[in-house]
Amino acid sequence: MSTVSFQDGSWFTSSYTNEGADTCVEVNHSLPGHVGVRDSKLGAASPVLAVTSARWSCFLAATRDGTLDA
Image (cartoon, rainbow, N blue to C red; front, side):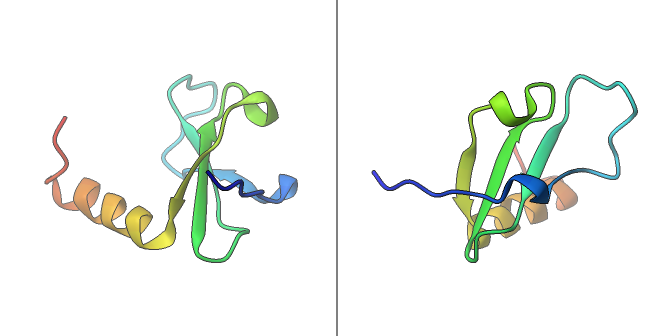
């Protein structure tokens, strides 16, 4: 298993996040070819899910067009 590291200051939340919402994620694009995803409630203490940029794009497309199974 390989380890990837994302820059601390590069995390952001979705523009759809409501202030005080407890169901949001933060995303980080600071590592070329990868996207980091973590729980916004835990911030820096959250485990990070790292996926390839291509897989992240597929995930976003599926959520936009409604083909992502619930």
